[in-house]
Each structure stands twice: as structure tokens, then as C-alpha cells.
Length: 296
Image (cartoon, rainbow, N blue to C red; front, side):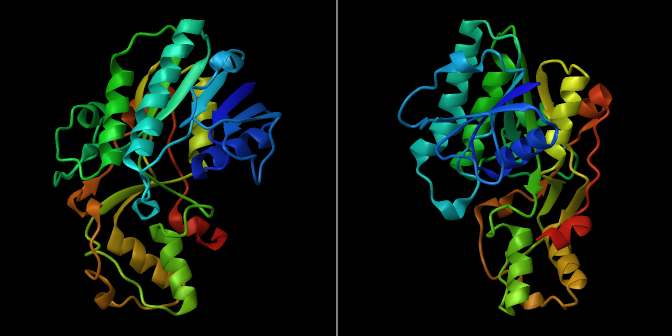
């Protein structure tokens, strides 16, 4: 099997590339920098902010994966132009170009549970719930991801297009400012932790589950559509923090909660219902946070 990944060293693209290496798939990578930590058959240096992608080289790929994005990490302070270009304009352009060229394989894009917006409703949201949400969007990342999802749900094409909504993904190589590595590293340093109230509920999926799901989708010949990847755990942020302290033999201080503000605190409950994908290919996430803490 041959796959092409757009995005060379991102958290998700790296996990998919490593899985491809493990499975001995042929792999082409497109990005700003050469892959680090994984290998590929061909690397193509591209800057999608400067020029449109020449999609002719993608035509013989069984799967083309768009794993480029911007805006998810607020601390990076990426420009609005970057967010909308990489999250909307570029993937839409690639969709249209693949259609024009007569691509016959599978194209993969990713949505986010954050597209649900600021909701207090406590339920596992379906694909239709997220696609139709009019809840207030707290940032440009959320808005841009909604725009892509609504395009994907509407445009006509002959190739297979899988658009996967993902919950919070985690793993040892994630940004150190994200919740799990932040807690672990701060405890190790003996420093003071700072959080919001911690009462937001989030769903978590280990990054290794994504390439495993893609391989299963290919094997089962999954139809085009929008699909939720349901994580194996749904928990309050405060519960995750407390469990990490317990595993590391420390007591969590209540004073660390409520000391900072974040844009996503208005999104009180974000969890995906994965029944559609589970019924289609039998996928269920299995990795638990406690199982992989030592990998950090």
C-alpha cells in the first residue's frame, strides 16, 4: 500500500508515518521540513502558505492524508490568515484538484469535537450534532474547522473522502504545554500547577489509535462520510489531573484550580459518539491514559 501524508513532523502526522514504517507501507511526505523520527520513500518540501500544492504526485496513492492544521494550540499565537488558510482554503483546494484529476483513492481530513462549540449539554455528540451545531464558537480554530466539515459534507466527488472528527488526542510526543505532559513535567520539577476550574469534561484518544483505525478503514473499505473517532475515556479535567498525581505519588492541591482562564472553558462537555464508525468497521479505542503515563 502507498500513502501520502501532508504534514511532515506534526504530532498526528508523525504517529501515522511511524505506523506506516512499521507496516512497511510506501510513504511520501509533504511538508516544510524533512521528517524527524520516521522515514519515507520521498520527501517533498512545500510551503502551502506560498503556493498551491501540485496534486499530480498524489494520484497513485491509496490514501492521501491531510494532517496539517493551525490554531489548536493557543499559546503558539498563530495568525488568523494561517489558521483559515491551512484549515480551510488548502484542504478545499486539494479536494477540488483531486476531483479534477480523477483521483480514485481515499482522501482523509480531520475535524474536531471542538466544533460543537460552547455547550453545557451532557451527551455523546453524533456527527450530525457537530455538523449542525450553532453553539457559540470561542475561537477561529473552531470556526475554521466547522467551515471545512460543512464543505466536506456538501461537495460532490467520485473518490472516497473520510472526514474524521477527533476528540482530545494525546501521547508522549505531544506539545509539552498540553494537559498531560504539563502536569507530569511540573510535578517532576516540584513547581506549582495552574489550571482553570477543571470542571470541563473532555474525551481522550491516544494518538496511536488513529493510524490503527485508518488501516482498519482501508481493510474494511469504509464508505465516504463524516465519522466520529470515539476516545476510550471521557473525564473531567480535574479527574485527569488528580489521577496523574496519584500515579506519581503526589497529592493534588485544590488551590491550583481556578487560577487561570482559557478560551475553551465555555465548552463544558465535549465527547463523541463513535457508533457510526464502530458499526461500519468495528473500531473501538482501547488505550487508557494510565497505560501510557510511563512513556512520557
